[in-house]
Length: 211
Image (tube, rainbow, N blue to C red; front, side, top):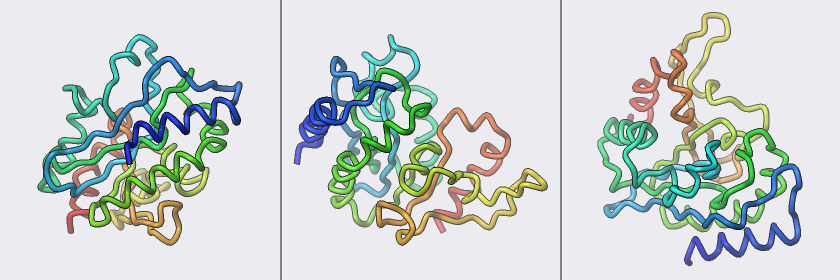
């Protein structure tokens, strides 16, 4: 299956049949294809969508998570890979929504929920090719879309509300309680590493995954 072609069909259908005026779909910018490493895929990364805040930057995006460019997000992903003993060549990265919205949709989650079903079906087809790979998600909105709207990444990193630190009883999202039907590990998006809690526990959580 050509993922970009299927995503284009989904975008066209939603635009005609389920458009949300709160945050219209952008038909001008292209579908953003997944990043596919050239080696055995051992890690799948799921993001939300490519709609960055800077309008001028959107036309420069040509690959999921901008993994074809040298930037802070790529370095973050490379850090995760290095700690897992793999490289970007072992990564398949995709977004749930592979097209752009008019505005970054984290503030219009109702739109994403309305458009989730068809995009989710395509995502499941993608994941069938990588049954043995570890799956991680990037960002809290993705976690909420795949579980429930009150879920938090910090829950799985064992955040203690009294102390503000992790007790390091880490966990993951089990297959039986998420819409993927696959175990996955939730990560914060790269800007959240500015928070001490995530920066201090990043390597510890990755170590938990690898063991």
